Length: 55
Image 1 (cartoon, one colour):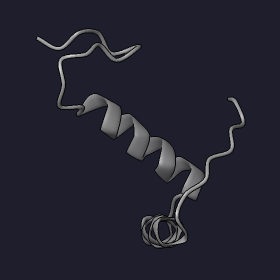
Image 2 (cartoon, rainbow, N blue to C red; image 1 turned 120 degrees about the horizontal axis):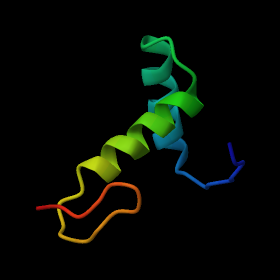
Image 3 (cartoon, rainbow, N blue to C red; image 1 turned 90 degrees about the vertical axis):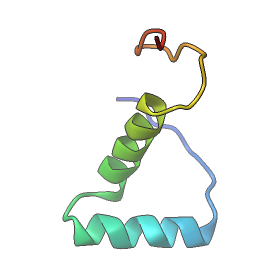
């Protein structure tokens, strides 16, 4: 694991905290899941590191 600091709008953090609580996961775990999902579902033809090129 690597520690990073990101700045996010307060409203977004509040939404993430609410969703995390509803799903009984940590905010950190939820943010990781969101990032993984976003990377797997990018709508462009560029290669994402660790994913391989889209066909």
